[in-house]
Image: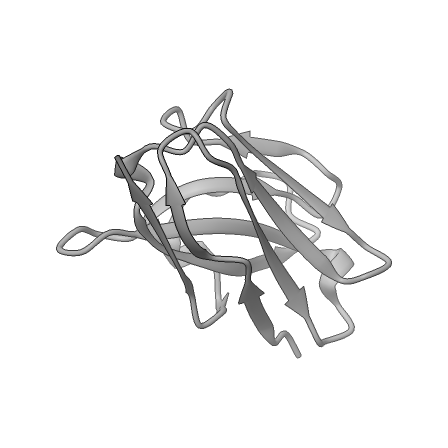
Length: 125
């Protein structure tokens, strides 16, 4: 079973950095594709970054060069390092777990079956 808990959100100013963490208390973390999504008020949930079970990475164009995604398999933890934050990065950030042993990275919300509770990131100008 997958149980995801995010942490690390908060208030930041434009240009600051934050690191989000997502820990899975289950035992199958290493088999799953993992991803970060975000949802701003009044908008649909959107893809931010993915890290597959074999370590392939994909980033949304809006965060390339500013955000990095990584995972620590020993700690069952997924990270999102966010730098050069912008006000438009303000959103609730969700960690998600997708399929096991997949062959294709997915950026679709519907392909991720397990979700954390979300953590708020607010960036002021």
